[in-house]
Amino acid sequence: MKVVIIGNNVAGTFTAQNLRNLNNDIEIEIYTQERYPYYTRVKLPELISDKVTIDDLIVFKEDWYKNKRLNLHLNKRVNALNPSNKILQIEGENDPVVYDKLVLALGSTPNIPSIKNAVEMKTENKGLFTLRSIDDALDIKDFIKNRNAKNAIVIGGGLLGLELANQINNTNLMTTVVEFFPRLLPRQLDEDCGGMLKQEIENRGIKVILNSVTEEILGNGTVSGIKLKNGKIINGDLVLIQAGIRPTIDLAKNAGLNTNRGIIVDEFLQTSEKDIFAVGDCIEYKDQIWGIIPACMEQSKIAAASLLGLKKVDYKGTIPKNTLKIVGLDLTSIGMINPDKEQTVGWEILRRADKKDCCYQKLVLKDNKLKGAILFGENKIMSYVYNKMEEDVDKDELKKLLDLRTYNCNKCGSEYDEAEMGILFKDLPPDWRCPNCKCTKKEFVGNSST
Ligand SMILES: Cc1cc2nc3c(=O)[nH]c(=O)nc-3n(C[C@H](O)[C@H](O)[C@H](O)COP(=O)(O)OP(=O)(O)OC[C@H]3O[C@@H](n4cnc5c(N)ncnc54)[C@H](O)[C@@H]3O)c2cc1C
Image (cartoon, rainbow, N blue to C red; front, side, top):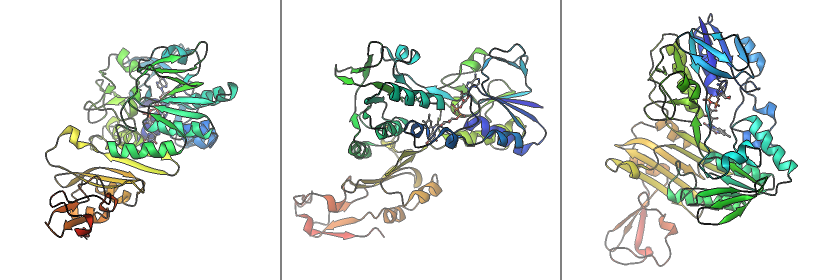
């Protein structure tokens, strides 16, 4: 049997490895339009700031493929697919490639919001960039050097936008982040933690502008800045857009496979064509797309088994797990972190918000099961959180772990429960009064949470 995989990043590579682990005899051919074997995209921002080299990013060198008898074809773009004849066409080549089973691991590309001049400025290499590949990082680096750029604008205050802004800032460019939402990391944080993060980012010399829609990329010949919807102009020698991803679906769509935002798959990662499977950033399962490495890894195991007819495990989705990779900033967000927006019944939240020390820990429970967490500035309970996700937890134990206390008023018995308040008792202002009997803080006695 001949299996062809299109795409050679996390999803394609690990599907190939899993297939080989399960079956020593099948022929496995991998096609990618990129010119490098599997490399990690995680450290691409550091390539721009010279903290890493291309070699540091390569995860599996060509020998690894040879040892596993995986035939890797670099610089080969697949431009058409014919599921009826089970063939695909490589750009610039006459002979089609035949397959028995096909895996689409096509990934995604950066989303470019509809901003006037954005597409033109990007395609004509005039100083507007997105970051997805090694070649993108090299282009950005060259542009900064050749144009002697002094200031940069990053559109998008999500994880990738902030990590990129941090490395651009490290190359001594004045850096401004512009975010559409009213807080940074809108999908990973709540308002309070978003505010704390903004402060930390600004302490590093990066300017943050929230709640702002970019209307136009400015510049004659090359980028000179951006214009916001409120009329404000921000000057910049280059603009970097990190505003989400778009799953790559055209190849599948043109071949008649079911697609929506992504390539539609079932719980066995099978597409609407029985011998074609899809994995990674390019898929949509139950209306969701993921765009994170843990999802690619999980899916690649299931896809490999399904393709070989071993449909034992079905895909249940992957819990979103994100860590901000900026040295000195510990921030992890996992699972459901803002349930109040979805529904209220059965959800409980325990928070320890230590604004003075810039630490924020939030645990989200539903019917006593741990559903999500934000850990900022303090990650000693990280392994507990990872191990207990979706498990039953004991609220008192959690309060103890977070060192949350309750304080009782000696006069009227009112309770101040730190787990439910946005501020620790010690951080309440000296003139704070008991909401019930109006006595001072001194009348309150603290109990540990045990
Ligand atoms: C800067 C950056 C930092 C990131 N950091 C993190 C992180 O810290 N944690 C995390 O979980 N995730 C992170 N991600 C996301 C993570 O890299 C992706 O989830 C992952 O790369 C997806 O893997 P994939 O194999 O599905 O797709 P991709 O990595 O997109 O790979 C798909 C490959 O297929 C090729 N291809 C597409 N169409 C064709 C075709 N027609 N013919 C031939 N080849 C084709 C593409 O060129 C590409 O090489 C980051 C991403 C970026 C860009």
